[in-house]
Amino acid sequence: MNTAALRVAAHWATLQTPLAYFWTILRRAVQQHLGALAKNQRRREAYARQQRFDARLAARTARQVADLLESVPPRQRHLLEWFVQGYEDAQVAAHVGTTPHAVRQARYATYVALRQQRAC
Image (cartoon, rainbow, N blue to C red):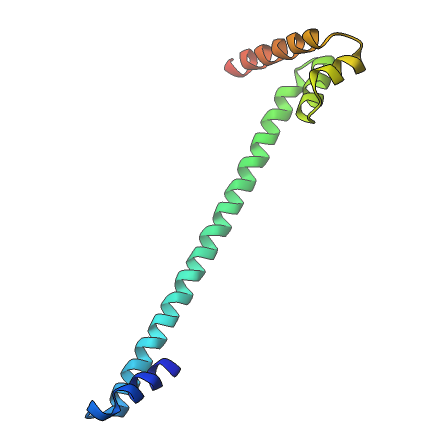
C-alpha cells in the first residue's frame, strides 16, 4: 500500500488518472507479495522434504552400521567404540593392557574384516 501511494504521490502532476495508476501499482505490489509468499512456502516445503529424506537416510545408515557391527567380535567392537568416542590409541592400550601399536593393528584388522563383509 505504501509503495503504491508513494509512486502516485511522486508522479501526481504527470498522471491523467491517478486513481487508476494507484490501483495498478497496488495490484502489482500485491502480486509481488503473493509471489514472494508462494516462493517462501515452496522453499519451506523443499526444506521439509530434504529434512525427511536426511532423517530416513540417517536411520537406514544407522541400521546398516548396527547390523554390520553385530557380526564383529565384542573386543573389536569395543575398540571401534572407543575410537569413535575419540580415545587415543595410547588411552585404549592403557585400558586394555596392551601397546598402542597392538591397538592400531587390531583396529586395522577390524576395518579390513568389515570391508570384506560389506563387499560380500
